[in-house]
Every structure is written in C-alpha cells, then in structure tokens.
Amino acid sequence: MRYSMISLGALMLATTAPAMAQDASETEPASPITVTSAVTLTSDYRFRGLSQSNKKVAVQSTVNVNHESGLYVGTWVSTIDDEVSLPGYGDVEVDLYGGYTKTLGNGVGFDVGALYYYYPDGAKGLKTDFFEPYASVMYTVGPVTAKVGANYAWSGQSGLADNDSLYLRGDLTVAVPNTPVSVIGHIGRTDGQLGVLAVDSKYTDWSLGAEIAQKFVKLGVQYVDTDITNDSGYADSIGADPRAVFYMTLSF
Image (cartoon, rainbow, N blue to C red; front, side):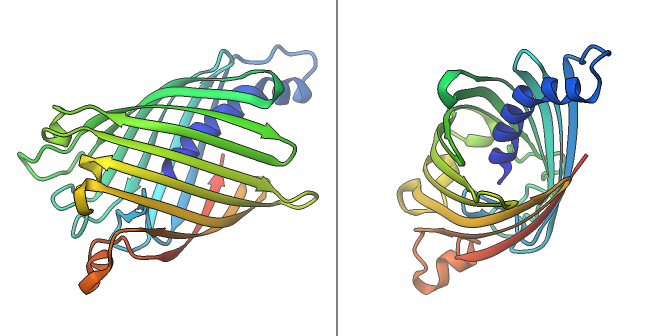
C-alpha cells in the first residue's frame, strides 16, 4: 500500500495539478508547485505481504510536494509494532522519498526515485535504516492501468547486513465505469535480505481488493497473502498469513 500511494499519487498529481489550477482560475497563473497530504487508518499495515503492525490497527500519514516538471519529494509515516517481524525497530517508521515522474504519449508513463527507510526510536545499536531506489513504468488504456516496477537495496547498508534485496512488482487497477469503484490487484516477489523470514530469503506476495473514492475520502479492502509456508503455524507467527485489510484515507 505504501509504495502505490507514493508512485501513483506523484504521477497523478504531476500530470493533473496544473489543469485543475487553471480550471479554478483563468486569470491567475497556476503555481508550479502542488502540496498534498493524506491520513490513513488501516486495520493492519502490510508491507510486501508481511504485517508491520503485528496485525493491529496502524495510523499513517503522507505529505507530497510536486513540481510541474515531474520532480517530487515527500515523506510517509506509519505506526508499527516491533514485537514480531521488526524486533527492535521501535514504534514508528518514517520513509523519505524523492523522484521524477512523467507521462508520455499513448498512455505510457514512468517513475524513478529513491526511498530512505528510517526508524527513529529503534533499539540503540541496532542497524535499521537503508536506501532503496525504485523504477516503474505504467500504461493506461480506458479504465485500466497496468504498472510494473522494481525496488533494489544494495548490500553493505546498515539496515541490510551483508545482503542486498530486490523486489519485483506488478499492479493492475480497473476503474468500474460510471461508479467511484476501482478493483485493484498486486503481485510482488522479494529476493534478498528483506525476505530473510522466508525459506532461502525468497517469497511471493499478492493482494486483491477494491476501493471507493468520493471527493477527499477513500475506503478500501484488500485480501493479502504470501506463499510463505504455514507449517506449524509459521506464517501466522511472523504476520505473513492471509488476511483481509480494511482502510480509510482522507486527502487534503
């Protein structure tokens, strides 16, 4: 959920904000910079299929600063619970990001940037933070938007020990015509340090759900799962078991 808010939100804002400003005022020049924010309440914070809130409610917020050129920066913050999949990471995750997004002709667009994962109240002496560059391309035809991308965090960073991490992902969004409803699907593959809880540090996550957007409010539900084995209840013990996640987002 986190990455889709960053990349798709930045792309949409970069391409639509000037037009919206022009509609609001034909006499005043549109500002080249748009600032947006949002707050989300979710029943479970899932990151690449794994619960980061120990299957509990999480509160999240994001602030984006977008330039009409396609450049953007922002921050995303979430409450977490370090009892299971994030031992010693504390109670808060802060993601700082920046990048460049562009819509080309024929419905094609791209997004490149970098994320920095920061855990301000992690255990003293525990190495938690790291950078993760990302890139994606998207294609929109009618009500359907498809996106594929990759995130890569190199080895040697304090939060990744001596291993790197690669995440490949695909997303599909289908807007139901003449309704505020969208059907969304996702699949991702983790290989490396961020998949250390799985066999051979590799696993697949997927989700399927729907969203209803009305003005500044979005309601959604997703069914999230992974292929991490649940033998002896292992997947359940690390927060990788299948679960329906409900969320509400208010945009400002």
